[in-house]
Length: 342
Image (cartoon, rainbow, N blue to C red; front, side):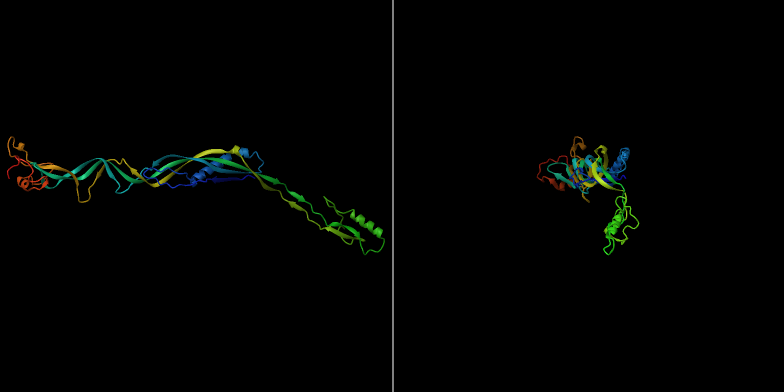
């Protein structure tokens, strides 16, 4: 009789993955059910391939194949495409910022002794040349598991069938104590009976054997009759023997995924940042009203002109005379020769 058993030994510990801003490094993994099935199948196939070796025996052997893991090697850890989720509110701009969607906020104001008026330039968009942000993503690592198929042989010891013959009642004849007569003749008669006593191994006995009284003799029993016993053949298990000559080696790949691992992206690419709702970015202070004398070539005063996208109607001398100061005061030194008359 030959039996095949497939066992898996994997005394391994799973370590939780909790990386900070980096892809995880996988710890020793416990093979999944699919991987375990693959390993078992490979060992079963190997044992079947050695059937010719095993069948050289007489069938009185039991063979066990066991999967024994001997090592793991992790491949590179890669981010699973499409799994990245940016953490809301974590993006910040880096690199160079420029503004777009420009407009002038508020009225013109004066700065020191300048003959121009200035305005605050607001922007709808702040455009960063690069950015960075926090995120979560899934990471995949393929682990190559090395294992061997160890074969153990356990011989079965054969015990053949045994026949134990039975025997009739055993004993001997003596002269009947109640006998009255020629005692010597009676004793000779008993001795003749005893000479026919059944003996091993056949225990052949005369038909009268064991009857008492028989003639002038009585039977003294020394052992009761026993029926014959037939014990069937059977097997018992012998010692276990490691069959290192049948050991085979394999590898199997298992891919594992760590989900929702936190990370930080430092090269998030260009990013347009919006201002808080209902506001604009404070882009710059720019000239919005000019009165250059060159508008009337070679003469003074000049003529007011809107500048830098100002669409208002306060580029006038009347407003210039009452405009607030963004910097400086009414005592600021200025000639104002190009300011048109009011």
